[in-house]
Amino acid sequence: MFRKVSDFEFFKLFTVLALYFAGFMGLYHIFIHTNLSNNLIIYLFVVLAVVVSSVLILTLYKLRKRKKEARRLD
Image 1: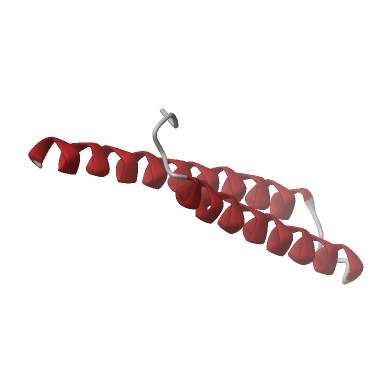
Image 2 (image 1 turned 45 degrees about the vertical axis):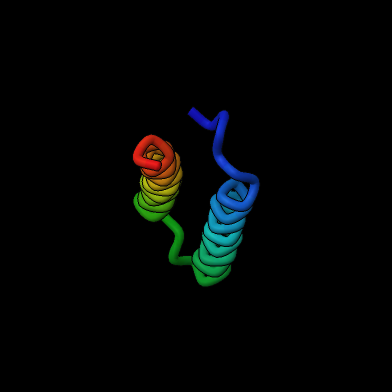
C-alpha cells in the first residue's frame, strides 16, 4: 500500500500524527491535574486517536491512488 508514496507525504502524515498525539498527551495531563479524569474521557481519547489515525492513513492511500490514476492518463 505504501510502496510508491513520496517521502513528503509520509512526512506530512507522521507530522500530523505526532502533533495529534502531543496534543492528546497535553490534554490528558490537564485532565489528570484538574481531577476531571475518568475512564470515559480516556476511552474517548483512545477512540478519537484511532479515528484520526485511520482517516489520515485512508487519505494517504487515496492520494496515492489518485496519483496512480493520473499517471495512467498521461
